Image (cartoon, rainbow, N blue to C red):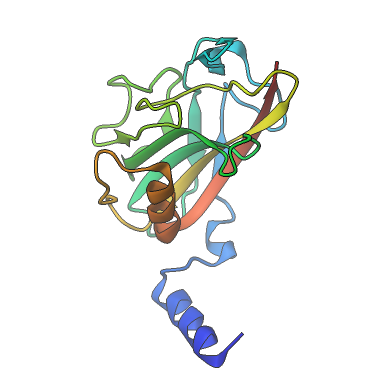
Length: 184
């Protein structure tokens, strides 16, 4: 590591732009719909593309966000999709810092915290899109809540998931995940 890079990283840590692992170690995500390592329920399976599920967004709750959290983002991502870039199933930004959960079925409804913005998933629609891997394949579904150090992300309404992921990553001060699986 170059001296300039070391100084830059030390400056970012000191300014609080990059959170230390200890600052976010208590941040946790739980769910009554999704369990670590468990098969997703039919409710969280897509309806279409050969799948016949409920396409219902899961209940998610988080606690002990890092100090300095000004908003949250929630993502659901399949790193195993045969696309070369994975598959984004859900991307919500600008969730107010006072929020601590999303109820089951909140996607696309007024059950989302006021001010939250659901972006287009990789199926091409705004909101949650359930699991639907190719037949015979087991895929992982990573549900993550990101604590952000900014109140809102300035994204265009048609932002790509890559742009949203970049902006989320650049402003994350802590995150917590639950990874479920699904196969058909």
